Image 1 (tube, rainbow, N blue to C red):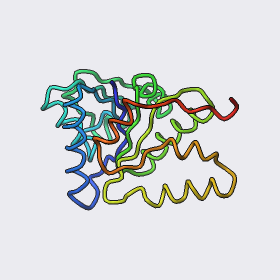
Image 2: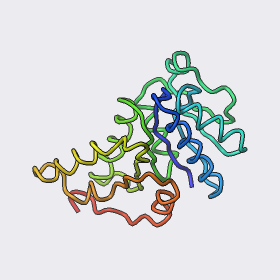
Image 3: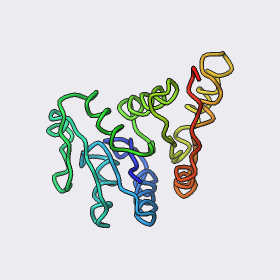
Length: 186
């Protein structure tokens, strides 16, 4: 299984983010999964890619030409896909991946996963998504999404389909046992 990992190009302000990223890689290695990610050697992205490479895992990096210079592309990757735009990067990661895992990150991370969720909602793709809720990072997001349901702007099944979990083993099990979600207009 190819798992897209969306995460920060920063390390965050606690070692727990690095430690949990390493646990993710260990779990994926035990399950013979491969990683698709943003191609950088910076931040949590670098932690994940370098640990996966150390463990001889298959890692595909997808990075824009501009970000390859700014964030520093991980030149140790066996497979790097360079594109011109963030839109092309997101499309390439969508096409390469069987499931989507979100670790703590910022605007780029949010942009990537919300596009995936939107595509599931409108029926263009149907693949599992999960948020690794390290240090309760995504608690407020989950609360906000259910507020959107309460206010009639998101159908509950499109929030219920998302896993918010602090245990990567449970997330991986969800990926393996994923049941497709009925699209908005089905």
